[in-house]
Image (cartoon, rainbow, N blue to C red; front, top):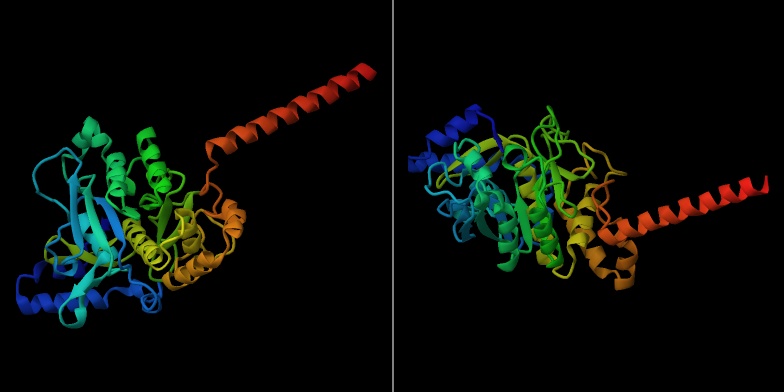
Length: 377
């Protein structure tokens, strides 16, 4: 998440030491959660709040001491191969609060409320903070390079039904790996929904970003308050949907708040929506959950900027209910259409082989016709 150093950020970080001021800041944090209205959360929460679902947050670690995350976090391993806690868990805590934040105070009316406030976060540390000088070391060490792949497998093996990877831009990579892609397929086969941020260099090189680009992962871009695609949001053919990602207030460290921009926040919110669906319709496959999320966006067709459009939590739950009511035969018939965008549902290896064989057969048949024609002349 790219931090935006506005006046609000400064205030939120400086005044939390005094109890009364901290209450004021927490109240302000809730008031600034503008994304709750366009996502239609009031209506969605009447159906589901994510109860019983574990969401793995593969990030920089989550600080469970923050009051908005009290009782919501299960601590997993640190797979970065690093030691020390300096600059530890800020980004991960922010993402966890957007997914499963429960607020605090009377009637939990203060602080950050997440999209799935009754879900549980499984924290798995797979990367370091953006400003941590040891990040480059992590990328060159064997145990650090494969941390994401190991984190995905750990999450699946420990009950996560949704895996959130806000690893866009510098936290992710612009080159995929076989280990990571195999881990993604392992998770999908186990019934887990994977969500990742599309990346934050859309106004620059707009590179292909992993893990968002792996087939089967729901890649999420960001929109601003006007629901227009943010300039920094990556525009790619595999983009699934977009969600709020500008001027987003989230938890920070153990007792403060921060406001920032980035596809990280957008991805965390979509992971929260996936948790709502998983709780309400536990029998749906990852492909069906993705289809419900994309259907909620309501956009005709697919674009590199918006994917299928701006996600809506209430409509996603409605779509999930419709999918759950269909017969197995109907779902099999509709399966090729799940995933939408041009590269969002990449063909599996068998489909590639079949396509290649058909192309070869067509070419051979054409050659026979041509040769036969020459013989008759």
